[in-house]
Image 1 (spheres, helix red, strand yellow):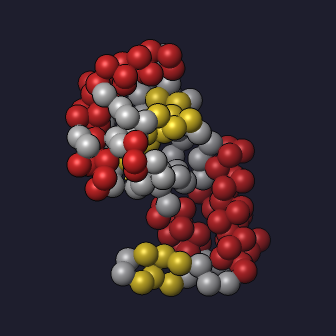
Image 2: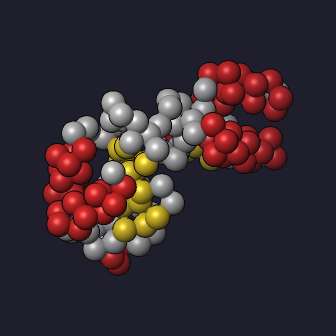
Image 3: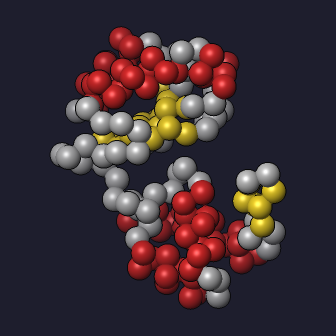
Length: 148
Ligand code: FES
């Protein structure tokens, strides 16, 4: 694994395979446990620290159990310039947790993420695999009610 300007990039087949296998494990178990990371390291002949480094670098991987609905609000500049901070604060108020946390009832996990590819419709967020655009505080309330 290599880093350029703080970015990790994959350079060989084993490292690309690691990304695929981490994604499969994340989909299967909902998060990447220590046991899963150790098994992946052994099967790919990589160090555990390399596996852990990749698992914790990408925001779409999690090393902790997640809620049934995973909210990801875009924190990149185009969304920030369209008041994503207000959207973040609205979500915090509605579900009572901060980014990086999971509600005690396990319904929601909340994360900030980099661009999700709909910058022209900022501010934007995802809940699980669904994308929501042109967000306003009122829209947030309606969207979250549908997931409660
Ligand atoms: S910057 Fe937010 S979706 Fe691209």
